Length: 167
Image (cartoon, rainbow, N blue to C red; front, side, top):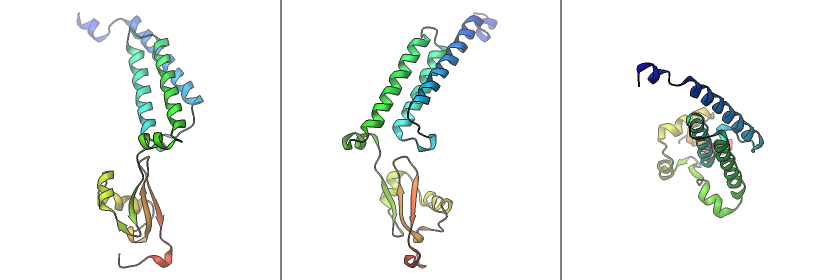
């Protein structure tokens, strides 16, 4: 192989790979359009797995000379079907237990649960930053801080009369 072939390759193959990539992108876009609407910020772990798998299929199928658009589209369709089935099966407790991580209480009535903080991989500095971002000066003014299944922290403030200044 000479330098020209190593850098440029067969331009016909490159053009068809680009066409196939655009077709797979359009196929994935159409499938995302008909699937249930879930925002990226609200992705559960199984949503992330599906998104990464879709990206891998589109990327690999577009550049593989031995993979047709039809093969890539069939895999995309299968991934979307499985994702949709899991989304619906999560209404059953045993499936939800396997698919969704449990909620973890990080703060209850101003007291930080260090064990749950470690389980969630959060430091005290992380928790303090989250409190500030949500408008709380510290944990003393927090009734509950919950690490949600999707990775966000929800904070419920204590009623004003219950906030103690010594915390």
